[in-house]
Image (cartoon, rainbow over all chains, first blue to last red; front, side):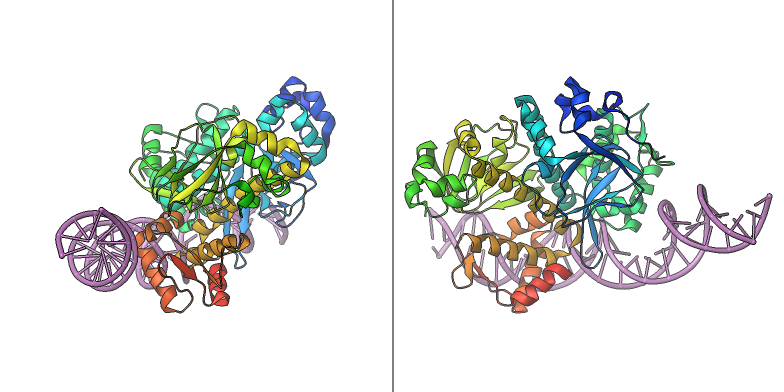
Length: 237
Length: 237
DNA sequence: CGTTCTTTTGAAACTAGTCAAGGCCGGTGG
DNA sequence: CCACCGGCCTTGACTAGTTTCAAAAGAACG
C-alpha cells in the first residue's frame, strides 16, 4: 500500500511535474537532485500552515490536498493534489515565506523531495524548463479562479459535476483512467470541504447523481456514465 | 474625472506596481518603457476573456475588477484592482496565453501600458526586481486562496466584513485612507458578484452592518466605525 | 424634470445547514 | 468465527440563510 517511488528512470509520472521537460530529457539528472522519498499515511499532515518549507515535492502516488483551517474548525480545501503534481511549487518563487495553507495526505502517499535551491537551478536552467514552471504556476492561478467561480456561483450539483469532470480530466492526462474508471478516494466530507458544502448535502447530491445514472461510484473508484448530461449540469447549475 | 497619469516622476503609486523597486530607484527608466496612457469609463471592458494581451498595465487611478462570466450571465468577480495594482501580471509569465478572465473598469480609470517584453526585461534585470515580481504573483495566489475560503466557508456577513477590511488594508498601504475614510465605489451588485451572493442579500447585510454602527458608507466613501467588532465578525462568521 | 440606474424592502420559495439516528462495512479481539 | 467497534455513508425532520420575484423609493443623469 505504501509503495516507495522507484528510480526516476522507471517513473511514469515525473514528466508531469514542474521539472517536466528536464525529466523527459534525462530522468537521471532529476534523480540526482532527489534528496529523499517519504511516505505518509492517509490523513497525516504533510506540511503545516506557517511552516517555511525548504523543499518542494513531487507526489509520486496517492492523493493529497491543500487546505486552510479556521480557528473554529471549519476547513476549506483549496485544491486536490494528484499523482504527478508538484507540491508547493510556490516555494520556488520567493524564498521560504511562511505557508498560508497546510497540506494533508488524503490516501497513503509517497513523495519525492527536492531541495528548493537545487530545483530552482533546474527550473532556471533552460528556457523550456522555465516555461514549464511558469505555465504550472499560471495553471494553478487559473484553476483557483475557476474554483472561486464554481463555489461562488454554482449550486451544489453543479460544483460536484465540475469537480468530478475536473478530476477525471486531470487523471486522464496522466494516463490514470482505465476504461472509463479512475481512482476516487475522496470521502464525502473532503468533497464538502472542497466545495463549501456540508457532508449531508454532498451525500444527498451524490446519491442524486448516482440514482440519475450519471455516475457510478464504488470502492474508491468512480466512473462517469453519462458525460453529456454531467457536463450540461456542470455548466448549467 | 478622467485624469490622465502624470509623468512617472510625479507618480505616487508607481512604487506599488510589479516594477516597484525599479521605479523607486529611477522613475524615468519606467517612464521610458511606458507605451501609452489610456482611460476607460466606468463599466467599460478593459480586457476581454480569450484575448491575448501584448501589454501589461498599471492602474493609475480608479478601480477595476477581474471577473469570469457564465454563459447564462452569472458573473463572479475574482478580484478587485485598486490604484497602484498591476493588471495581468500573469502576462509576464508565459507568452500571450488567452486570458481565462476579463477585466472591467468599475469607476473611471486611467492606466499606464507597457510592452510585455520590455517589462519582462525590467523585471528580470535585477534580483530585487525579480523578487518583487515573484512576491506579487505569490500574493495574488494566496489572496485567491483566502477568497475561496471566504466564499466557501463564511456566511454573508463574514464575507462582507472580510471584504471591507481587506480593501481598507490595501488602500491604507498605499496611503489612500484619510482619517479613517476611504473610497468605496463598489455598487452592491459588484459586491454580490464578488462574494457569491445576490444583491438583495448584500443590501440587507450591509444595512445590518450600518445599523449596528460598524460601518458608515456614503457617497462612494466608507469608514469603519468599530474595527474590533468588524474583525470579530470577519473571523467568526 | 423625466428617465434610468441603484438601493431598499417584503413575502414566498428553496437550497443548504443542523441535529440526530441508523446502517453498512471492514477491522479487531476474544 | 462471531461480536463489537469505529469510521463513513445515508436518511429524516426541522431550521436557517439565501435566493427569487416584485415593486417602491431614492439618486444620479442628461
